[in-house]
Image 1 (tube, rainbow, N blue to C red):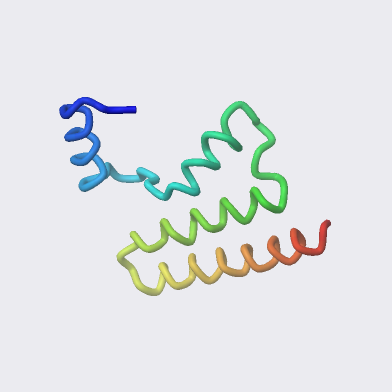
Image 2: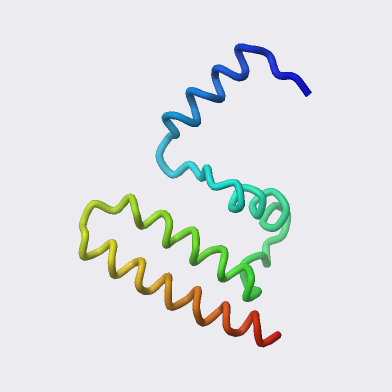
Length: 91
């Protein structure tokens, strides 16, 4: 599939300067498209919890306050570990 030059240029500009709170991680975008859309119960499974906590951990990199950033990432990492253990145990 070929895209027009103007579309490609717009996409390059957006990707180089994403607006605030824009998710550019391809894994999270795939989850949004295939996992969240149309399912109000999404996120309640252990896999959903891992995805949410991963997104929070990644977004915390944008917090300027180092102490707050560390606390947010520590809580998100604990959540990822707990949900990951439950997921691998098949619960």
